[in-house]
Image (cartoon, rainbow, N blue to C red; front, side, top):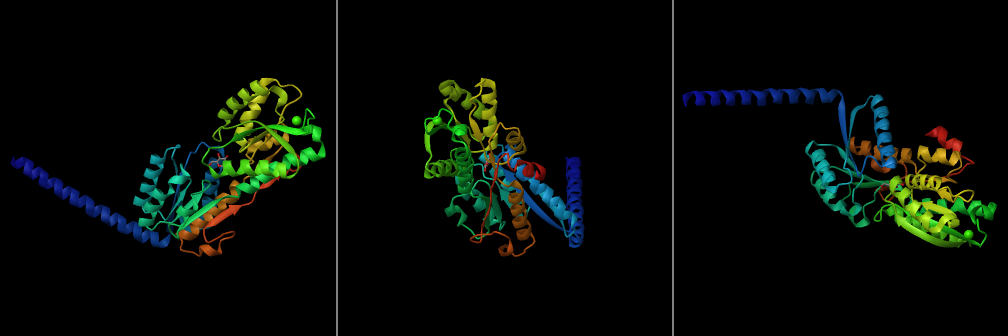
Length: 352
Ligand code: BGC
Ligand code: CA
């Protein structure tokens, strides 16, 4: 009994000693941080294996390294993958809050569930830069330290339409292969709740019909941004419609490339449909170069990463956010797109 008492006394002393020594370690690091200030940026991605998202995240890390080399701050960028699961994402935000991050950049798993994340950050007074998956306006109004970086989805839909309109005007039989005066098409859509799928689809179709070109929809469905799902969908459509399909519109490049796999496997012969995507992924630029895609729209992951980083850095270093290029309504940055076809693809391949 006495021995146990003695031992537990000893343990107490040891643990007090531990506390004391860890205190002094903290003091040391606090002194040290006066010399080199540290900025901590937490990033949570809806899914790291999404090709476009992984481009943005890699670009953010590269830009941060470059900035750090300029020497003013030590910059920590911690990227977490929510793997499509909102609970993971919520836990990741909790961790960033507990570890006193300066800013949290959030690519929402479910963009309608932003309020829960906002409440956590707000009560810790940590600003949020949302990106790519846009919270609804009502949520963006919940606090004055919320920002959003993305692209103008309407413009990407309109530009996608332009690529087909221009091809049609140049040589209508290149698009309207059966010469019936209408374009028979299928549409591969992204995730149903995603602002980019809904708006891209709507404005792509609207723009073509407003230009006096008749469309006939053979089929449309979601393939959730994913190449493999698009291959499956496209194979089914080829079985149903054969060489009737004249154009494949795809809400992103990954699905466009998936559709091309199905087209190549199906042996459609000389009447392959034209495929047009959005994003400007390196693989898609190659496909435009080799002619398997008629075009894509550059969704500028570098500019978006730049905007995300600039906001995060400025917020963390208590700079003036309002001086940041392109900031609208004090909280939104939307980067412009560009049309890419065989005419100008080399320029974009060089810049990737
Ligand atoms: C991109 C898609 C991507 C999605 C993820 C869109 O803006 O075009 O390729 O899968 O964002 O949220
Ligand atoms: Ca036709």
